[in-house]
Image 1: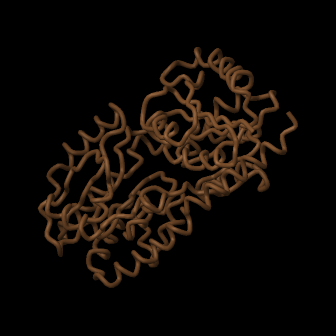
Image 2: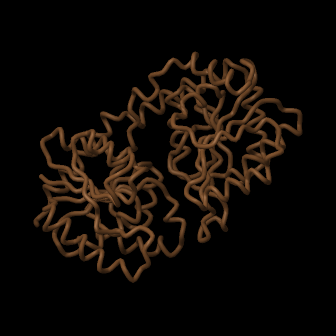
Image 3: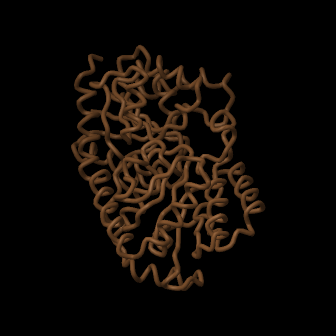
Length: 386
C-alpha cells in the first residue's frame, strides 16, 4: 500500500510522524508531501526512514487565483506520480487541498483534525457541512472534534477518536534536578508558588473571537495582576514566542501593556519546555479556543492544570480531580482559581498531579494510538474500490 501524508508546514505537526512510521513498520510505503524539504518536520520524517516531496498544493501565502492550477498539479502528483492508495491530511488547509484534488479519483482521503479554531468561523463551519462528504474517514484528535463533526452530520462509522501520542521518553527526565536548576536560573526560591503558561502568541484572528488572541494571554495577565493585588504571591512563567511576524507584534503589544505586572517572567521561545514545567507547581491554559493543548504535556511531567472549559481541555483537566476548570474569558474566575491552587497545599497539588499523569497516559499512549491510527488508514484503503 502507498500512503501520502499531506501537511501544510515544515516546522509544526511533528506528531504526524510517529503514526505514519507505524504504517512503514507494517511494510507500507509512506511519503510526506510538505511545502518544502528543509525544516524540523522533514528532518524528523527522513530520520524515521520515510521520503519527503514538495507538495504542489496548498500554495501557502498565495492568493486564491493561483490555487486551482496548484490543485490540478496536486491531483496529478498524488494519483499519477506517487500512486497513492490513500491520502491522509493534517491541518485544515491541507485537508481542503487534499479533498479537492482527489475528488472523483477514487483515492480515499482521511482528514485528521487537531483543533476547533477553523470550525469557529461560521462560513467555514457551513462549508464543512458539505465538504466532509469528500472524506472517506475523519480522525478527531479529541472527543470535542469528533462531536463537532457529528453535529455537522458525519456518520459515526466514518469517525474515529485517536489523540496525538506523546512519547514516554518525553517526560523521562530528572524532574527534581530540573526544578532546582530552573528555579536557581530564574532566581525563584524553592518554596515559591510558580505557575507556567506554555503558549505561543498568535496574531489575533479577525474572523473569530472578535480579534482576540486565542491563547488567552490577555485574560491570564490581568487575572494574575488581580491575584497579586489581593496579596497573592508567586511567579508566572510565560513560555512561548510570537508565531510569525504578526505573533511577534502581538507579543510585543502584550508586554508593553502588562510588562509592569509583578512576578511575570517573559521567557520567550524555548527549545525545551520541560525545565519550566519542572519548575512550576501548576500549568495554566486560559485559551479561548483549544484542542487538548499544554495540559497533556504538563500532566506527563506530573503537573496539574488550570484550564478554560473549551474544546478538548475538559477531557484532560477534570475539575477537582486533575486540575481546575474555569469559563473562558473570565478574569475573576481565573484569578480565584490561581489563588486556590496557590493556597491548596503540596499534598492536594501532588494528588491532582498524580491523577493528571494517569489521565495523560490514558489519552496519549503513543504506541497504542499509533496502532489505532494505522489500523484506520489500512481499513479505509481496503474499502476503496479504486
